[in-house]
Structure formats: structure tokens, C-alpha cells
Image 1 (tube, helix red, strand yellow):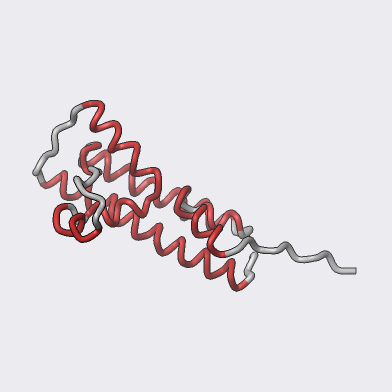
Image 2 (tube, helix red, strand yellow):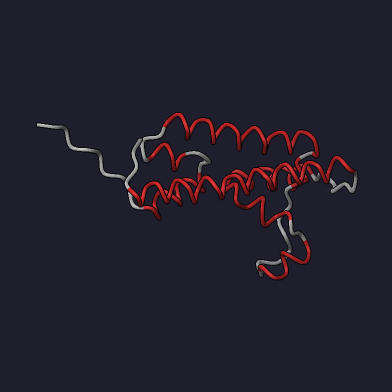
Length: 137
């Protein structure tokens, strides 16, 4: 008798967990090394962006309307893809009263954090696809 193969969780659950914790979508479907690699890469990229530009690189837009966000702060659209990870710098910058800077380092920090979010979006889509396909290896 062969052992039963583990059943992969539903793709929407994998996608949601992958958004909440970068790399956790892969972890859920049994690809622990890939999940750890992707999760650490996204985390390091995000933290490097904060280190370069300061905690004020992630700032909540004044409106919830996506069209307004794109017009006022397009970087936030990429940053929110990091999941709840991006809310900590927002709270910290408001608590510290960190002023927004318009220096080149601020731009580079925003770029790093947004790219981390876009990388997380790719990981979310890939892990959900693999879960839907039933790949557990």
C-alpha cells in the first residue's frame, strides 16, 4: 500500500496566507525551502528599503479609493502587497512623527519596499497556482 499524498489546501487560502506572511503560501503546500527563501528575500528587501529611506517611506494614503491612491502615492500600491508587514512602519512613523523626506534615499527606499511587495505578489500567484494544481513538491 502506498501512502496517500497530502491534500493541498485550497488556492484562495494559500493566497491569503501568502499575503499575510510572505513565503507562507509555499510553506502550506509543502515547499518549505522555497517558502523560506522567498519569505526571507522579501523580508530583507523590505527591511533594506526601510533602512535606506527610513520608516516614513511607507505612508498610508489619505483616501481608500484606489484611483486616488494611484494619483497621490503610487508606491503604496506595491507596498501593500507585502501584507500586514507594511502597517508596522506606518504606525511607527506616526508614533515617532517622522517627517516625510524628499531626498533620493527616500525614493530608493520606496522602490525597495514596492519591489518587495511585487515580488510577494508573484509568490502569491505562483503558490496559489501550485496549490490549485496539487503540487506538493
